[in-house]
Amino acid sequence: MWTEKDNALHASLKFNNFIEAFGFMTSVAIIAEKMNHHPEWSNVYNTVNIKLTTHDAGNTITDKDTALAKAIEELFNN
Image (cartoon, rainbow, N blue to C red; front, top):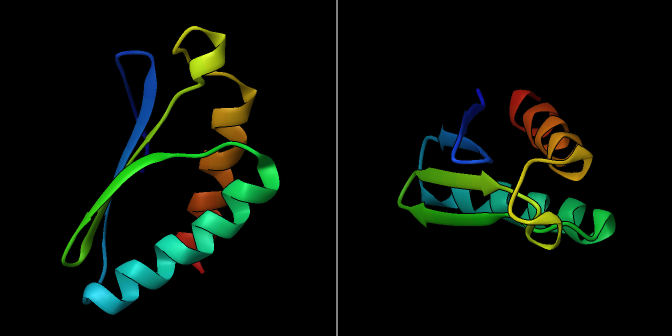
């Protein structure tokens, strides 16, 4: 699900429609806020593109990114 490129974790997730994609983003936003670690992302119709990197660590992958990636993956797979 995740690929590593340019010191970041990337995922492109497809849903059945815009409502499902946007609902997923809302759920991720709640998790990210609780973790105080926020993704860079975009949504076009049924696709959500996510990039995780830790800016205050010099734009590199940290435990914050891997923890959020795991939470996102669990949410997506349920």
